[in-house]
Image 1 (cartoon, rainbow, N blue to C red):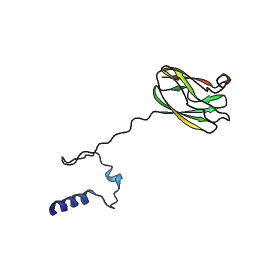
Image 2: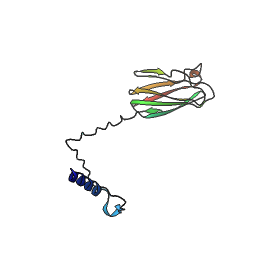
Image 3: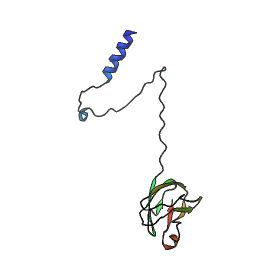
Image 4: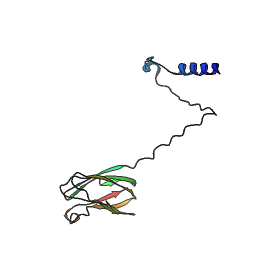
Length: 143
């Protein structure tokens, strides 16, 4: 048992570079990497995060919506910020989507709205009072 502990310590020390400084320009980074798992040691499992939906910035100004004219199909996260002086909202309607924020945003507020977009044409607008009729409407193409 003592020999096994000494052997493990020797292997550990041999594998650790310590404070040695090597010039990688001469040796370069390692080309291959292997990991050996003992049959008695359970393999660690790593769950990779799901690919995050792209974030589309949306700026609501007084009687204007600023955002990209074209978006990719698939999951999207709209990050919506009210940069205007009045309260504003955000609604989107198109192929398979008809949704809006649960509440209006006051000046300086920011929120997110996740949606999944299919290819096609969508209309976004501000559903507050007469804002849509005053120009707070935009057509967005999803490809």
